[in-house]
Amino acid sequence: MRTFGVGVDVATRAHVRQTLAAKLGRFAPRIERLTVRFTDVNGPRGGVDVACDVKVVLSGRPSVVYQTRGREPRETIDRAVPGIVRAVQSALARAPRGAPR
Image 1 (cartoon, rainbow, N blue to C red):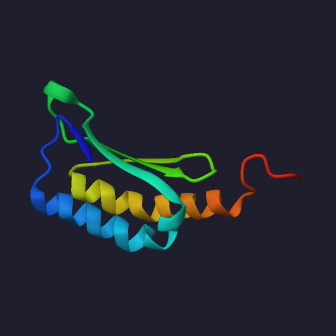
Image 2: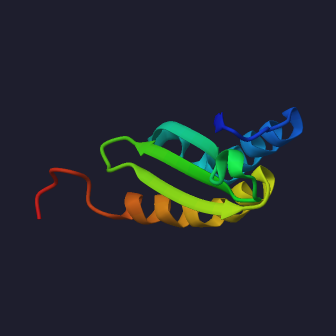
Image 3: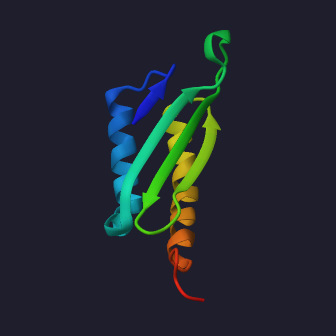
């Protein structure tokens, strides 16, 4: 997990890990790497936008990237999880790279 201009406390980090493990655990044998990045969209100008980018690198498949925005890191990851699960399911349902048609 990486953060850029956003404070993420220990409880939120644990929530992210637990939520992703619970929702993506069934795909674990096909996931090579998972990255979560929180970024302060407005930077030093202030404001409430936090971007959450989740990237899932799949074995033999294209990577899946899902992005959401919200006020807080916990809110953004909670909004991203259903979408990333759908995107991973869809990517795994497609024919693998280099498969004969």
